[in-house]
Image 1 (cartoon, rainbow over the protein chains, first blue to last red):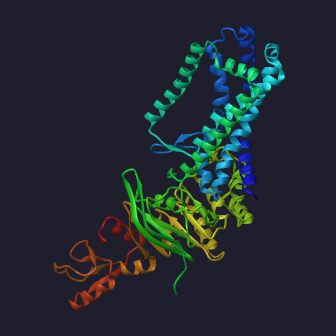
Image 2: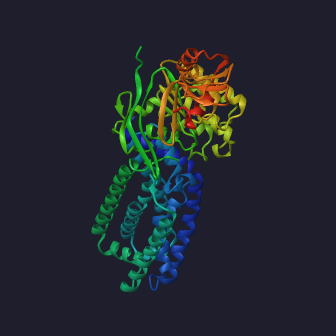
Image 3: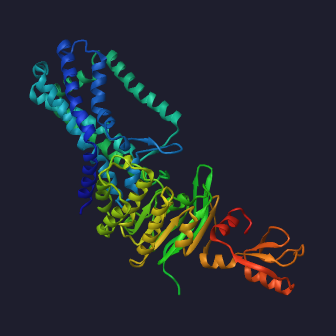
Length: 242
Length: 289
């Protein structure tokens, strides 16, 4: 069996175990779509509250990862090693490194990409304001931008399964810096350009569709390759002693 | 007869925070059962994990079937069935799902052996792993490991949480498993019975260092306790590692001690071979060195 087939088999095995999370994400996608359409219809992109951008960003970044089964998420496994316990189990089996690495990404994107597509479809279906603001073609470009963003930033979650040695204090500081940093960037963009990040991508989708598609896909591909390489290197460096 | 070395460990060193394993030089041969023993924290599990490439060594090399395990080729892993002390990451799967996941990667998977073990241990395969008691989890782990029917079996504390009858059954299963062809078993254990019943060789570890690899029968024939007829002279006696009072002594080299006693015309009333756990205790408390 080819490595791709093996990786897909392993990923599907994991996806089947994530059914609870998938159902939650489907339910959540309706709630989020309603939120995004409601805020949009009230404001029509005038004075959109920053919380809209924050929710949009987190929907396409961290949400799918948050509903993965508990054992697939990072856990402190003795000392300062943070690793996905499920990854430890897989690593004990004679699964080729390539298959193991590929399966991490396939299983994550098998859940995250359909979730993101569902949110985008629901938004466009539920909101006449979005349809009026962006014709189908532009909305498709807008969707590609955000799906690519989901791949670029979401890759960090399957990549982190492999583990990291980091003290609890450092982990807390990094988390605060990470989420604080995102918020800070959003606030700066909001006040400097007087536009939210979502509005800017809508504008880009309408005005520069081709460059937007190319740049988004290129960045997603670079992100994916970077994180894949990162996992390859980390596997041989992390001690799975617990 | 020279036995074929299936696993060779040369000058292996592994640092984990302030703990240092090794340097270790060790080999494991085909058709043998080796028990790895030592105090808690001696480095037994770390050694087995480094052997499985779950942690990279700082120095030295490990060869499995003549192939360096730090190379990209990972075929050697299919030839080893490894049972860790605790299996993590599978709480949300039931036994059937775990069988599906594990058996996939072993061409040698023996479904009938798996079913036999499941029946023998009465393992509920539809219950989630996380809901099983520790003892039943361990039985399921064993069924999932033994059924791989790999050439090398590495068991890290396989009987730690088991009840007495289950332990007995397992020992019988392992003995039977050994007869399935040319096999090698490495078993880390604190259970004297495991060592007594199974081991051909005993690897003794202390604080990350290898004290040695010994043939079990040779050890048990060499370590003896003597009850002397008369008080002993207050001078060193070859091989003696402990004097319990003036008339009782323990030797780690019966031949040397007996020839000395004979030369001094010192007679003993009774002599008995030490049990393997007593011998290991002497080694670990440092009296046998």
